[in-house]
Length: 64
Image (cartoon, rainbow, N blue to C red; front, top):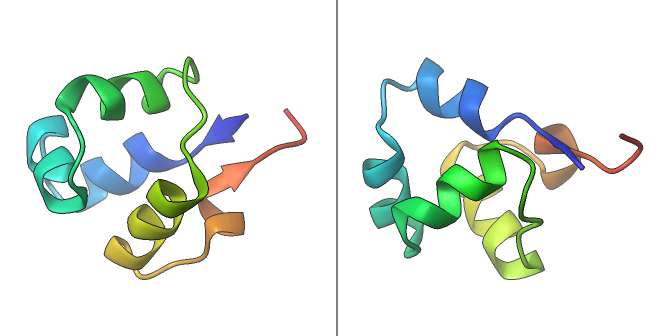
């Protein structure tokens, strides 16, 4: 699954640790999502979308 998490995080000037703290996960989880090694759960995907004020569909592309 292709993700825009890294792009959005960088645009907001956040470290992986800062984003992880904001959505209640570990920095390693954010790192794994950004490297497409981990597909987040629906609650985490929703939390990330809410944090960045976007939609889950805009953040994640399952066609890749």
